[in-house]
Length: 117
Image: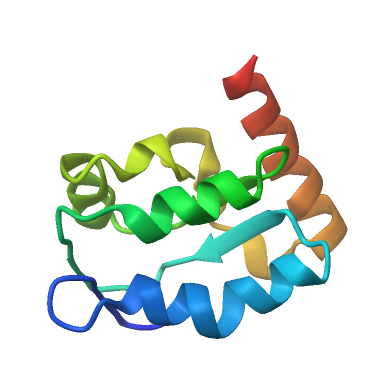
């Protein structure tokens, strides 16, 4: 991802949604893993339109955030983004770099499936 997620000043989620995610959704992708260990600031806004839109467009998929700093996930919770994004707890995979992508996806999928059931 990027080092700063600034929804307040620059509406980063809108840019990310329109320039990247929308193109992936058109291709049929419905599972998203955001790796955020390099996000050192989150500046949230109380508008959650783009998160809600993204969430609705992957109705039988999911959006997971792994390895975000605790202060970032606390801010996400403050702005109620935990309604749209799955993160924290068993979704912190410190060894994601050495895990084959298929195995990482399977582990995340299993974790989120358990949470949803």
